[in-house]
Length: 248
Ligand SMILES: Cc1cc2nc3c(=O)[nH]c(=O)nc-3n(C[C@H](O)[C@H](O)[C@H](O)COP(=O)(O)O)c2cc1C
Image (cartoon, rainbow, N blue to C red; front, top):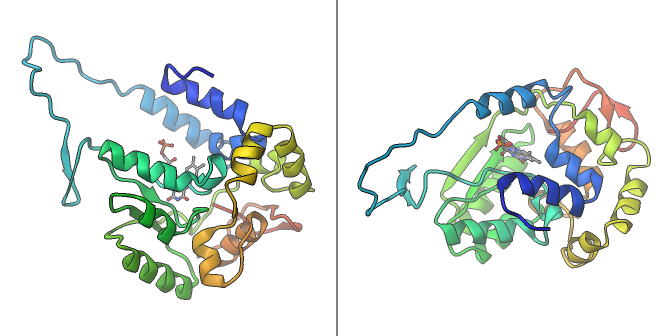
């Protein structure tokens, strides 16, 4: 598919990805009111065009958190990026380094910190969820430091994780989720070959290293729910049954 505008990426993702992944990226929490409001608010922001200026020496570089970048923007943390593209976190970190902007690795990435940092030519940023499991916090911080990470990004919205209703319908969670995901993968052979088969392992690299065994998608949803600071009032399907816990 031809990409000529940023909006084409959504269409391309819808075509390429199994629905459980597309809806995970495309959706928001609860009835998605906040997501829609954010979109509406952002569409009100306009770039101010200045004319009749000398543009021969344009410089978009900026210093952010003591580091000089080519542009004042960063790739934000996106969990499970390695499910959307083969070893996706590594690809994204390399792309960001090529463009001279920071890449932020999610706590819940597919590729572990060590893999991403060792394959990226620039220092990555690391996003840390503030979670109840202090052993995990210490472990992941030490590993980030040892890998060469110097910038931490704290995400503090986990005390009340949002229930993502779409996930139950899409197969990310809900009844027979694993079987539905397999069926969707079969119907998306390009993804199945490129990411499903050649992009393994598909566990959550940072968490698996800490727990000492692979943490799969289903385990992750339950694990994250258990160690979030406070349980959400929402009830969603956690892969094995309805519970009062949910995911980020
Ligand atoms: C699919 C998806 C996964 C995300 N995963 C994380 C995450 O693991 N950690 C985090 O701090 N933020 C996560 N976010 C939040 C984004 O980093 C970002 O803050 C948010 O999407 C707002 O930016 P946007 O308006 O450009 O989407 C995620 C967002 C999406 C859409």
